[in-house]
Amino acid sequence: MKASDLFIKALESEGVEYVFGIPGEENLDLLESLRTSSIKLILTRHEQAAGFMAATYGRLTGKAGVCLATLGPGATNFVTSAAYAQLGGMPMLMITGQKPVKVSKQGHFQIVDIVDMMKPLTKFTRQIVSADNIPARVRESFRRAEEERPGATHLELPEDIAHDQTDAIVLQASFHRRPIADDKAVQRAVEAIRESRQPILMVGAGANRKTSSKMLREFVERFGIPFFTTQMGKGVLDESHPLWLGNAALSDGDFVHRAIEHADCIINVGHDVIEKPPFFMRRGRRTVIHVNYLTAEVDTVYFPQIEVVGDIANTIWRINQSLEKQAHWDFSYDDNVRQHLNAHLAKGADDARFPVYPVRLVADVRKAMPDDGILCLDNGMYKLWFARYYRCTQPNTLLLDNALATMGAGLPSAIAAKIVYPDRKVVAVAGDGGFMMNSQEIETAVRLKLDLVVLLLRDNAYGMIKWKQANMNFPNFGMDMGNPDFVAYAESYGAHGHRPASAAEFGPLLSKCLATPGVHLIDLPVDYSDNDRVLNREIRELSAEL
Image (cartoon, rainbow, N blue to C red; front, top):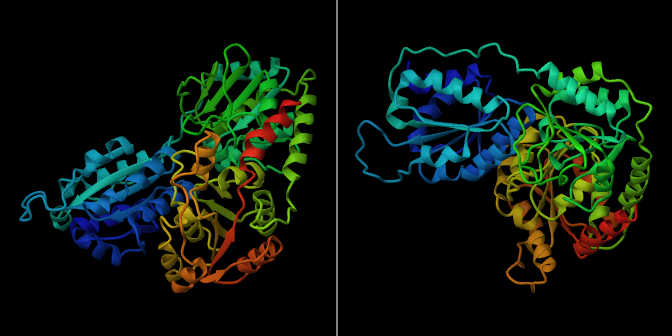
């Protein structure tokens, strides 16, 4: 058969449902093979957005999302998406075209060494130089992308190779199980927890797997050990649970950090040093147990004393079977921390100021969203407010990026989330800066007839950097910008545009948009004037009193 047909059959064998992207001249054989396959092409308006969609598909399903671009500028537009998936631990395969490698009549026109470019950004990257190699290359790309730690892979299919004939056959995935932790390591962890007086559980991004979530719920219920989450660990455990101590949205100085400092044993499940540190280790003060699929990557702020390396769910299950609740455990300090945290989280939830106050914003969104609704955050100042104040009750219901932390991913991620879960409510949350980096994908959402809400938070500036600039006592410079009429902009694509005139109008409007079919954009001005007072000073001062 033709090599491009074999390539698509290999994708079908891997269970691929969608290919996100923009084809070019060098992909036309592959595009024709895709046309007659069971796989649906999701045509996007920018390759970067296609990569964000594929990565989010991988994040939500555990299966590698697939995206397609042509050579040269199409392929280079995947760079940020590759880093997004690689740092965020999201399985993804990028497919790019290339000029003929056997005989080319166009010199070096559009030719960039994409394989070398992708090497530092992926787990695996190859140019396919023979049609017979396609089955092995595709199988290896998926295996590498999906095994722990998940990430990005890349294949380059030159135009002439795609057109060649081959009698190679598709390779099926082998049966495999994740390795499990050593018994002695598990027992060492159990002994450390048993002997501690104030243990605490930390849940990171690596624990965001269905089986891990189930075992961790059992752990918390059985032993009554308090827990907190990293930004990318939100939702693994129900954050409305009475043992939740908060989210480490800030690196230091929050109420949760008082509990961390008081603990003598931290059970650190699924933490990745790619996330901003949820706490800073200091020698001799406490025992940190690293529970993860891979060994700990030692850093100046992270050097655990005990490592339990293997399948997380299995490790927690074995700890559950071996550990007993201890009478000498004392969580009274944690109870005090939780009481003060909950009081502070409620403060400002009914603030009537307009432009809207961030705490009121988060509270109103939480009220409008069902428990299984999915918020897809772009990157900006609001990410800290949502990470700290928005309580997730289910896994993967607040998709934020605390790894690459790239702007422009919010809307594409929301599109992918709605494709994966068409019956769930999905909201993209983006600042005006990040939104405009991939705003063209509103047309994609409209064309796909998705029911989707875009919550655009407008401060007419690059707000997070402006906040940092002010913290460094620099004058405001280079941060403010103009914006289009976002309501008219959305409507020009065929979406519905809305602009509430008060804080009281916002909550009911969001609920109405969630209940009304179509793509909706809400242009909501936001007041970030309290960023420094609350996040830098008030929280630190109040928590220090504990």
